[in-house]
Length: 119
Image 1 (tube, helix red, strand yellow):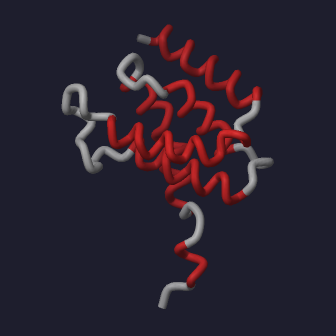
Image 2 (spheres, rainbow, N blue to C red):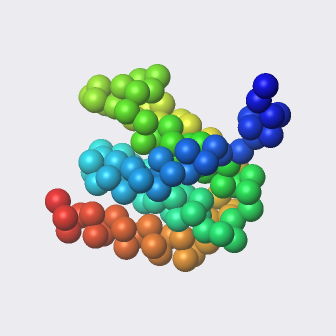
């Protein structure tokens, strides 16, 4: 029987999945996702050891949804493909944005700039 705590917070695999796939997803969606810099700041906040656990849980969940290849509205659909990702992300962002600091935002800006250079 699963422990009740298993249903709370990000699962270890979710954080690993986000760590492993976020930058590649960011690279693939560059220029198509208007919230990419905020998502990148959320990524750095979620990985920051100083970030409270409940904030990490919200961010990891939203970022995991963003990077998953299968979701409610498939990402390959023109115009509508990222609307569900955006809705999930913005709901999470509004909840925990106060925990995203200038350092997270700066790292995000640098990541997005470096991805632009790679394209």
